[in-house]
Length: 406
Image (cartoon, rainbow, N blue to C red):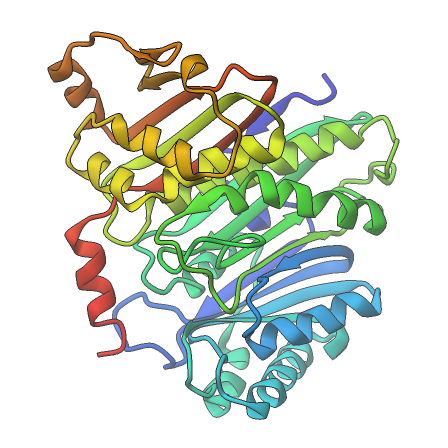
């Protein structure tokens, strides 16, 4: 059945055919058993590529190099990533090091420097240890089962890897769309999130891929909030190598919607995993807004709820203080009419047509003590709808970030 999405249990970025990956420890981060801080991804054949990047005005030179690579329009074969140092806030040397890192990785992969994207994440204001990075490339063994190693190599304060894979039938061919991501703090993205790499063995027209990715990012990773801060290194890239043998997917083709839906599903799953692993988080927050005047209003309302420090704190305490939802809706910038608003907490109605509805407080508190708290909002104005994700705010978040570099 064309368009039926199947989740691949245990899938990772190299579940997509024709991709290999690996990771190693080179010494950028403080040593501990099984820690990695550098990784590689390689496609057996050239890839169509699309990417979106941070809208911060102070960016890592690694982002600058990747923007230049994508602007050149040529195919890409792979990527290199390091964690522990962001290669940001270091002046011209950062650009020189990013170019060299891509070139060193390309030599190790047997491809051209302009075919390799380069990524860094970690502490801002520290230069890359290029001697360690040069040696690191030599130590990475690529494997079809290496996706988890790549995911581990990009972790900073993450407590676990974020990996997702789906398959879908398009035009009689089974394609895979698979991704890895990292991010636990400094997440209130204006494009995607910290770092997210997606690989697919589908053949996809590059212009089409680039046309759909920004909006997919806006409805998934851009609807995520951990702490209200946007990184200098935020990057989302998608590589498509065509190993599945399908007819190339382009705008208007019969399989375009099926591919787009499957790509969106991968990014939704990665977004949820990122939110669940927010620094110090104990609960996932989901805000589902319906009935908004338009899509923009729905997105503003949903994201304002998940980014509110007061809402986050209430979730941490399992406090059904729904007044904080009203507060967030009132300041979000979306059109609201109080007499039309319906509110729900984990499916329990607490406001209908702008008036409080009696509810069993202890029952709702018990629901909020679960792993996921969902706020349902219906503005009852039109058909705009959006979902945002976030996490609660805990003491542990302050502990982690009070000693990030010490």
